[in-house]
Structures are given as structure tokens and as C-alpha cells.
Image 1 (spheres, rainbow, N blue to C red):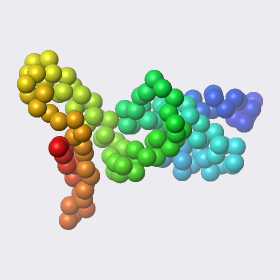
Image 2 (image 1 turned 90 degrees about the vertical axis):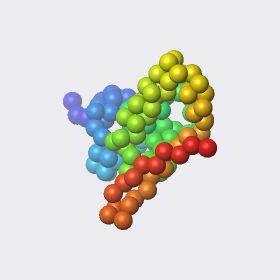
Image 3 (image 1 turned 135 degrees about the horizontal axis):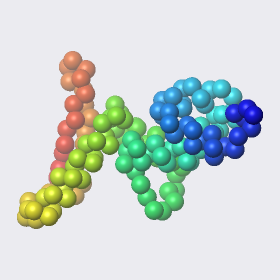
Image 4 (image 1 turned 60 degrees about the horizontal axis):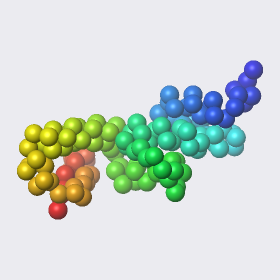
Length: 130
């Protein structure tokens, strides 16, 4: 049995064990069929969940591939750290809500992370609130 004989969903499941870069820069270049499989929603739903903490009970309007690309554009150079920062912030937020509700209430919705580079080209994360 050859790889091409397997169902697309099974190949897509295998691809979730790679990194997004490996899928895009290697697997998708093999041939047109593999290029189509590399954009399978199953892969990018999993990658969106792992790298961007994106989970939704509703079917998104865009494909998960597009969602992943949009997050990558919005937060360049954050692929490896965004998920950890987001999970840490949720833990802090939950703690504040339970233990210090007045402090929690003072935190504004719409806080955001801006990515900049300093003069030495190091990535800097700026947390901004309104």
C-alpha cells in the first residue's frame, strides 16, 4: 500500500504530527493532490488549537487554514509563544476573578499584544489595554 492509497482524512491526521512549516514547505510541494490535502481543515483546526488556542463550537466562515494564516499575520514571530502567553493570561485572569474581583473588574476588555522589534532586531511583546 502506498501513501496515496490512504484516505485524505488519515493522511491529514498524520500531518498534524508535523509543524505548520513542515506541512507548507515540504509536504504540500510534493504534488497537486498532496497540496490539496495539506490544506485539509482537520490539520489546520488542530494547528489553530495548538498554536493559537483557537477553539470554536461553531463552524467558522473561513477555512481553518485561513484562520491560521490570519493569526500568523496578526502575530508574526509569535507562533511558538502565543499559546503559552494566552494560557498564562487565562490562568491569571481566572485567579483574579476568583480571589480579587475588584482587580479583575478593573481589567479592560480589549487588551492586546503588539509585536515590535528593537534596534537589535529582538522581538518585543507589548501588552496594551484601553
